[in-house]
Length: 256
Image (cartoon, rainbow, N blue to C red; front, side, top):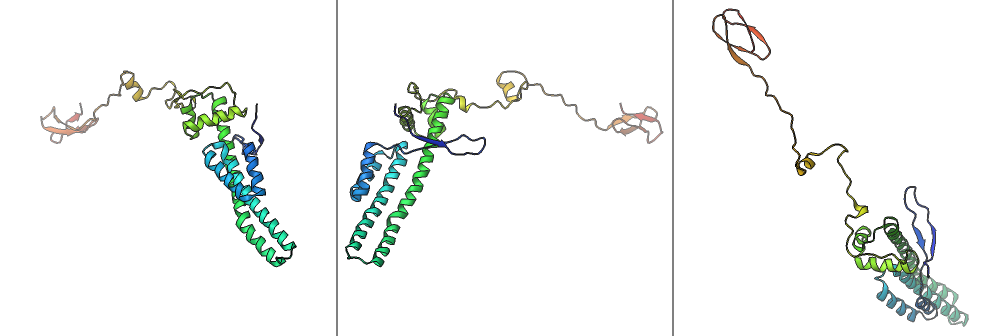
């Protein structure tokens, strides 16, 4: 079985998963484009752009397509540089003119090539992370539903199907793995944690289960009241839990 060429994992901080960096997975037609890029740049450019327009929607093709465009720019610089050198050796162009033209060609062709090289490296790393996520979800977490994988990775369902088939073809996933449509219920990797302490029932849970919720009875506070004096019969106001002498005859009156 054809296997995807993967480099050694790059160093990562402790506690984070290593992301294996892939090498470009070129086809026979890609090598034809590379040859055209260095032998006849205009044809190489047309073929590379055609390849990009037809296949760039596939995640695994993006680094390779960007790399092909980069080689077209390098090939254009090489072709024109060789032509200018031959012209200089023939005596038609001076050395100073050759140097000026070479600087101009470097700005026109090599700077875009350097930018494309950086973009290609980022695309390779992104694809490596994506492949690692697929393997983690499908093989390690045993998620076998297209919708659940799509939700976790952030790719469309069609992208998930295409990417998984690509990984199976390259031997990175077991060829016998079968994905089902829809979403896994419940999704084991998206389980909602139980926020209620064990042995403790929340009020909402008790209501939902029909269990009565008992509240502590609250006693009303004691208030001052008017009490008749047993000695003279006059009314006196007595504070709670206190006793006082009658304001008229001096008899002790207790709060009761």
